[in-house]
Image (cartoon, rainbow over all chains, first blue to last red; front, side):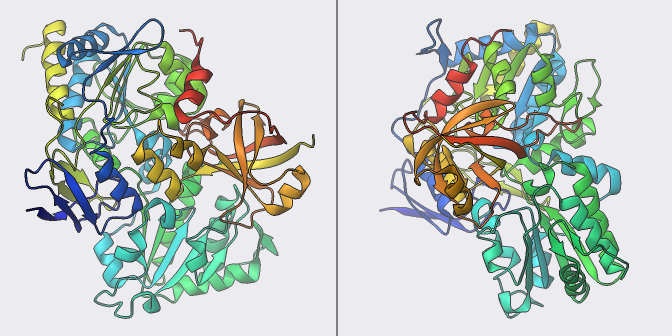
Length: 439
Length: 134
């Protein structure tokens, strides 16, 4: 007899869908079917069952090939590497649970490391903007029940957060949005005519890199002030119309993504978007929310912030926490050659950092902790495979609207495979011994 | 062979998301992300068939990818490579003191390279870092 586990949390994107159903075999060891998940979530659950998945740590040999080693050897190598480094970088944390992040930070404190999460290549600039101008936000539940003006600016949830629109932002029938998508007006701003924009009531094909200008033009239009004939490729009449459409709603929300955070202007684009939200509150209720990518990148920011006061790029090398993106951020540190070992966990900088930063990772003592084989694990000196959080071990994660949700375990990990927490705990004990810190 | 200048952006696609969860060492990752999406107008200027391999060059590096027609267009003048190791060979790594590289808006040159091979996701990184020194 198979068994169906309900209310499983999907550990892929920041939408953190909590309605997944998973059918497992009688002995609880195999995932047979996954219901309700999107294509990506479905693939993630099934990949945990892959036969070719590595189940023991692998050490790089002189010829570039990898040889299996024991977890004991892996713990020793990792602890020695971190304890002997002057300024190690501990990067990632976004695809693991808050419990593991907390243990990792304890290690970082003991060895004087720089701790950074994937916000570095994602919503890091958003965090800078939030520190500059604040953020009027809300939860996804409020959006489902109340929002009648939805803006997607520089984000493409049809591809990146596939169930976001059906669960929260466009299609669901909420308390005050009883007609679902009929109750809402969707505005999309993107330089590409994306699959999300094809659903839009109003679409603005902004000139790439001109988001700042268009955001400020909307602020100007709200006040009925003068605009040039064309801003960022959009005729002024359309900007005035858009401003009126936003004003006329009862509750609006701006979702924004990499289109604004990674484009030139960076944090200043978000400053302008948040300021637009603030201005709109003169006329109606408006909120703004970043479309966070990894399922627990928000959690990593939360845990770092409550432990050290800063949400990413935290430098502990002087014995106290310093934060100065551009100076203490991973990519800058790597490119400038200011770290002497790299520990990555629950992320893949090998695939997602510019190649000049990856070259540095490959040239340094390096450990990659990840259930998958990735470009990072294949250029690091040691790869430590671990259990999938949210599939083989539970733990806490934060949704993109800062709501904490406990993920659930559905199957056991392969025999002998450690979880992130177990591995980090063992490294912590050994690091404390090496550093002479009392346990 | 003609060479055209475009503005490169990178980003997620659902095929990229599925491929990374299926395994980055698998051919599906290369099929999903070792591509460049080009507008039909720009294809005409490039003078190449759809699904031809092309060499993409920027001030920061070069990479071989397969040129395909834009799936989310039209966007003349803009080229799109899904986020991943292929895009990251050529993106602008400068952060301008924000910690964030400039993944969107890198000027690139594209030229047909039909006899060159698109490397898989692991090899494209391994080859690029080979010989890197501390």
